[in-house]
Amino acid sequence: MNYCSSLLVAVGLVSVMGAAAADKPGYTDTPRITGQQWRVHDADRPQPRIVTPGAAFSHGAPAPSDAVVLFDGKDLSKWTKGGGPAPWIVKDGYMQVLEKSGSIETKEQFGSFQLHIEFATPNPPEGTSQERGNSGVFLHGIYELQVLDCYQNPTYADGTVGALYGQWPPLANAAKPSGQWQSYDIIFEAPKVEGGKVIEPAYVTVILNGVVTQHRKALLGPVRHREVAAYDANTPTRGPIGLQDHGNPMRFRNIWLRPLGEYDKQ
Image 1 (cartoon, rainbow, N blue to C red):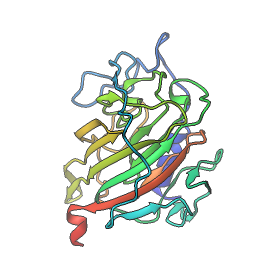
Image 2 (image 1 turned 180 degrees about the horizontal axis):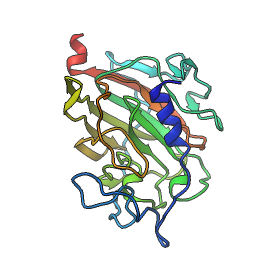
Image 3 (image 1 turned 90 degrees about the vertical axis):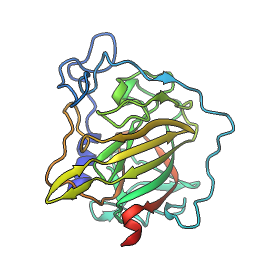
Image 4 (image 1 turned 135 degrees about the horizontal axis):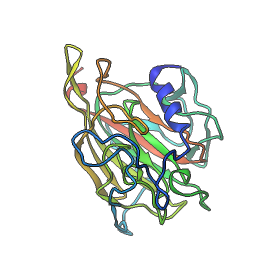
């Protein structure tokens, strides 16, 4: 299993709250995030305000003519688990996580891109906080955009749907009710690396159900649970798109990507 796949599985297996606050989800014993006053997964960090998505916002629209279609509802031929076949199931135009099947990622790698993906959490919902409808979209296989059922389900702020996990809470909680299709539109700017060092971080803009949740936020490094993220000498400038198995039967559909910037010139 390669590094990206190992990271997806490792993060996906985390299910205990550790030293959680007694009356609210989160932690009180984790280190402070670089450049912020808050701890990683801080129980006291203010919750994102709740915003109801516009009723007319649509999903399931066809991909643009120049898009790389990563999942068209028919098969998982563009996805893999550790170099082998992707073990999730496909039916009725969507893919679904099989219990304990593991996380998957695209066979192809990308630099900077525009990504569209739609997801649905289980209905009826089960569990609370991080145990309800948990998954993640992994950019370059190492940066996590949180997927979680956050409709009337509070959790720690930097683990809310629309969050850059463990780094930046969303500007708003625009979650739809359990079982409804929701959409992410993501602009990812790959980090710039020279001489093995990151000279400019990756930036991410995220729109959840038509509501901006991240506005060109600088990523601090690859995702980590209960630890401060930081770049290292092995930071890639290209990578796959990953989908996390966190033990919930999540559904995904209509996944497409448009390469941007320097990638177009290669």
